[in-house]
Image (cartoon, rainbow, N blue to C red; front, side):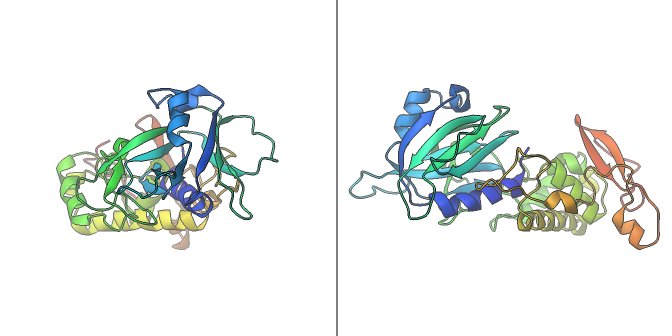
Length: 317
């Protein structure tokens, strides 16, 4: 599933292609991909046609585009609705020219107003149909800060994303608040990192990578975590996601691509995830032979080094 860096790569791509353009018409080719829009495909299309894309915003793995009626003589204030994109397991947002043949799993096509040298179609492709598009309301943020990472930050957030915490790449992320709430959790560290109500955007892959960089085991009890250790793991999470952004995200197959169809290559730099039975790169630099270990965790897998990430005796899952 795409995680924060992959969604941020898509956000940045969309900013380049759709910002300020008007949605002229909408084709819903598979109603299942707009099932989250309660009033159905016709209402979904009717809400979008004639709307101008004001921005592309992301909080955690949530992505939305605030909209404004392009026919309005004067904007009557801040936007009140947005197009929400949920990528799910295999959702892709692709900018294509009309001459490009339709993808096999094309679900929704948005036609955009012309702009020199730019494709005029934004296509939503989804093989497994866990993702989708829908129109949602924008509501004030609880803390009065920007809703998420955006070109023009506004204190508004898509209603469906209003319950999640800020992510480590958000300039308004509060470490003191995070640490205070982390200590109260009394759970395992990785379980806490995956809790979107505590910190958003960290998924299974990047949690393992951050814990490896921070030399902490996933089962470390949160209520025993010292402030310096919490800072270390948050810094590691931020660094690993920035590294992934530089590499265009992590692509294990063709299901995750940028809006131009390009795959990321951060998977070549993974130090923990998926490396069961391979030598720990950090230990190897010290002349220590330690093989990465895979353990079951919340119906998933966790990868750790038994030497530089020792399991705590009072560990929690």
